[in-house]
Amino acid sequence: MISKYWWKILSFVLLMYTCTMGFMVKIPQALPGVPLYHSIRNLFFHVPMWFGMMVLFTVSVVNSIKYLRNPLMKYEYYATEYARTGLLFGILGLITGAIWANFQWGAPWSSDPKQNGAAIAILIYFAYFVLKGSLTEEEKQARIGAVYNIFAYCMLFPTIWILPRLVESLHPGGQGGTGGNPALNGNDLSPEMRVVFWPAVLGFTLLGVWITTLLIRHKKLYAKQLDNE
Amino acid sequence: MNKIKKVALFFGAFVMAVFANAQTNADAINDVAKAERTQQSLYIVMAVVITIVVGLFLYLISLDRKISKLEK
Image 1: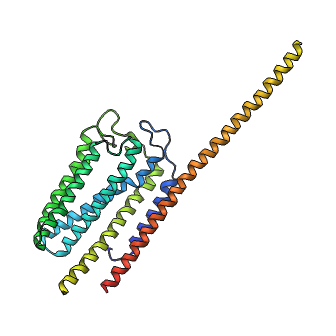
Image 2 (image 1 turned 45 degrees about the vertical axis):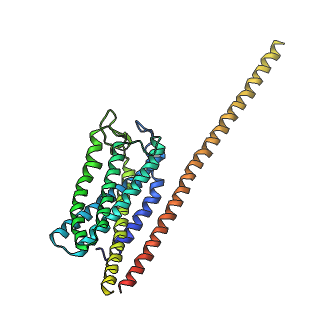
Image 3 (image 1 turned 180 degrees about the horizontal axis):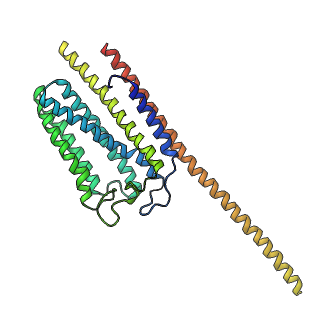
């Protein structure tokens, strides 16, 4: 599937659909709780970043496990590059979240548990690249990197999914009287919005996969060139 | 005298009513224009976002082609 190109076209079509319908779709008016107005349309752009990040990190950790079972360099390349694109998506998610929060919650960073958790998760993945960069031997880099990647993936779930839900949070799904920001707790999404949201998730994820395959192909070419020299 | 007063009052009220009516009409037109402008501003953002996404895709396609060429 990866070497074919139909999914690249699919990604383009889905993102075009998102970028037009995301602005044209009717949004629910007069929601209870915090009024989001048109900023609820960020749902089609901010949230897919995190969904895409989760998918990319999952592919990365699967390849790390594959590498530990069968040390082929291609698995190492896959793991590294998927983690890299996942990290990019995570950073974009943090930035877009800060822009949205600045409008909605009055400050770009209100130390919301989910914001903090996401930042910690991102830092853990930064450490993955620091760790790999600090090792010179390629095989050591791959093996220790793969082990660390599994740890990082295991930390991802408590920091962004579990811990923010155990305390009060401005994000949807937290504890407390309102259950976080009620506007986005799933029940308040109109069916029209769902029809835009899921294609957006798929489109952005495929875009991430495309970028990653380019990085992997580039890395393989680079490795080949080094071998020839 | 009393009759004149009554007639004057009647016309006064009538004129005021017309003015008041005109006022609300103008306001309504203003509101419609405002709503339209709000809606249009959304489409401007849409145009900007589409331009950026299309540009990024074109860049990705060109990178993809370059790498494909190198692979051959």
